[in-house]
Length: 292
Image (cartoon, rainbow, N blue to C red; front, side, top):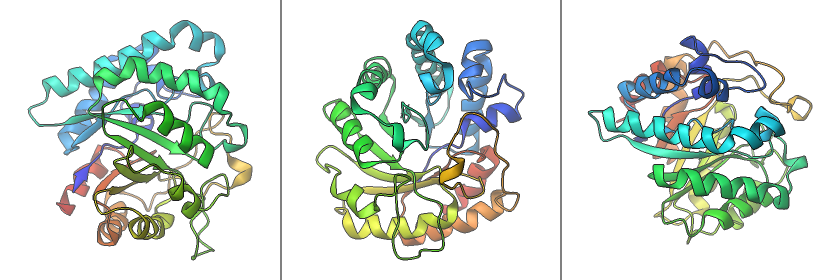
């Protein structure tokens, strides 16, 4: 069992870091990076095997074009340096996952454009690659986005983990879908397993993850690790996909003990990598150590 960390943004908010919309977790990098280092240390102390660079919100969608153009290179490097410092200061064998976000915005497959996204992804690759033990393409919500991330990172020389975000629809128990509406089967058929080492599912509610794990396990080669890091949001439907104009409420029943119940099901279904997304803090990761 490999344990990831949890949601950086919400944990920064919990520990009193500069935090708000639309900048999200990038605001701490801009105003007081010491909080980012503290957050990494908190997850390491909780037992995370991987910490994730705080690079998710360093995109125009969160920063705006002006600030992105002026500061993206500096902030990306800083996010890598902080993760590296936390790793070097740790007494554990923690590794670094480089966060490659959906560069045109979370939950927005309808606006994704490969020509627009490619130079931003290449910027992430060129600056963050030296800091990472693995490359983590996160919250991918369409087949087009998956294909582009694979293309940009396929020859980077580091393990590539692809993480997909799913529709939060529990009424249809037969088919898992990406937030684009495309089937998970279609997404998996477009993954190049010569380039991709792990398939994960993130930033969706816990209830939809087990079915996705089973689908992926039946589809993937045996050497491909499968993982999950869910969020604690209520279900997000197609009319709620504007991710940077609000702070969503968290589900109280998904406390550490409640989240562990789902994680046990994911492990039984075949997941070997488990962590948390938005709303999952160090206290959750500490509880997940019971899976070992």
